[in-house]
Image 1: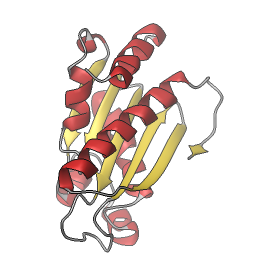
Image 2: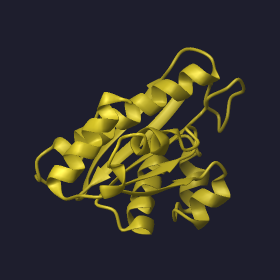
Image 3: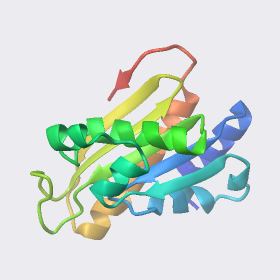
Length: 165
């Protein structure tokens, strides 16, 4: 069990908050890491694997214009995915991942490019990472970073605003 995933579940429980996921690149691995924690059902309400742009738009509400303008691998799309997951699941906080695991480029971005967003109460953490390694290494590191972003957004105070890291 990932200690950071346990921290997400513990922090959400202590705050009385629920969490959700929206995943493309990670294909449900973030949700899997969270649900591996005993008692996760107290706070984890669900996740969407939106591997296709059509699903990002139809389920998570990511605008076609945003997908065309920013590309499927962007902080803006990750933010829209996370925001969409909050709406779909009526969750207090959410995290989203999108990117290129490789071996081919996608959306004009090289393999290893990962964009993620964590959202809560009008605040967000946005990150773009460039991870070295094969497909499995990129996905594994993306999961770890997404969980860190989620625990960070849960553990920040209630001050409004946007945090970009």
